[in-house]
Amino acid sequence: MHKHKIIVGNIAITPFLCDHSAFDSYMLLCESEDQKILYTGDFRSNGRKSFDWLLSDLPQKVDVLICEGTTLSRDSYIAEYESDLEEQATKLFRDYKGPVFVLQSSMNIDRLVTMYRAAKKSNRVMLQELYLADIATNAGGSIPNPDFDDVYAFITESKKYKQLCKYKSRIGKDKIAQMHFVMCVRTSMIKYLRSLSKKMSFENGLLVYSFWSGYKDTPKMKVFLDACVGMGLKIVTVHTSGHADEKALERLIDKVSPTKIIPIHTMNPKWFEKQRE
Image (cartoon, rainbow, N blue to C red; front, side, top):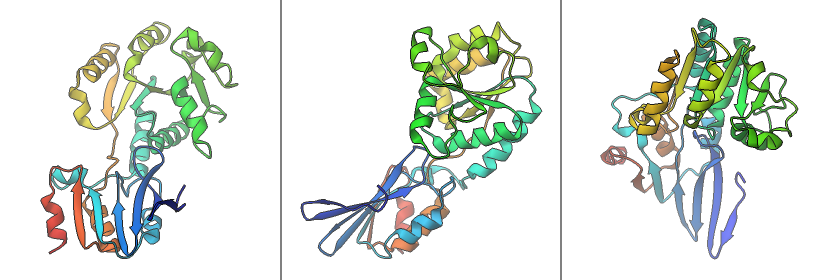
């Protein structure tokens, strides 16, 4: 898909694979006659894909840049890198001797790799619920999935057992209770976690919260986090944004030198005006 030009009438559309917290994100370059419009969508420079590589592929001049600015309303925001999070998570996974649970988006493949690498460094296996296991498997390549020796698939509902059987590395609660693990969880798994807590001790256990902090105030998230605290888990945030900080935005603007900028997804559109002064 990357740089594979699509022709629609007299418009040529070229996608450029970019880094974002959602898997398989692209910027779109639209060209018609001598006009060029670059639409960034959501992107960042602090993940596991090279931002320099992306910039080298983009044109040196566009007529219009339609650009996201999600983080511009956050004072002095500087994005941490996924490698920074990996170090933080590794230390936490080593310091806490009990079970470790990670609450993150199943579509955030970079974060999955981060947590897997931290689990490996702390001698823990990774446990993926069926939904995440399917996503990771279909993503292919080097994405950690139940084909790895230290990754196991599990289910929270017995009716999904037949679907689980396609994975050789599958595991149930009785064996999970005997393992040193990092389990990827979702907010819908309260009942499952309570059941698991009856089979093993959650003492010195940890829940890594890896979402935007604003979600903590939503009713569903609050119920889940309160339940985890009630089961004895310590909640620690390990997260970085899926959106570009000021430095990344400045580098993009400098590279494509737009005649006009149209800000999107931002509460601070005036920031872009300063870039054209």
